[in-house]
Length: 118
Image (cartoon, rainbow, N blue to C red; front, side, top):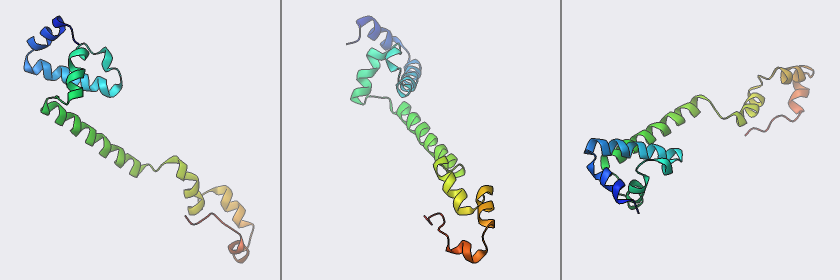
């Protein structure tokens, strides 16, 4: 339970100050160091009960959705590195692969196994 002095200090903050502390607390919670937040003993029980001010919760959800959208856009522009080899193999832009296939005439090259088509 929060100490009486800390709870009193919390209640004496203006609404704007409390909202700023909530924002800082949620940032700390996301970073994993909420236990070091000044008002942790007051805010954590409120967080556990779902008593977060709606405006702060909406801001946090909006930031989260923006982050997910930006991540999806980045991944669309930059495919995962694990697929890079398969992409090179399929597209045939690997110089060493081109050198390999140049040793065969087209008919013989077509009979050799290549990269899987998936």
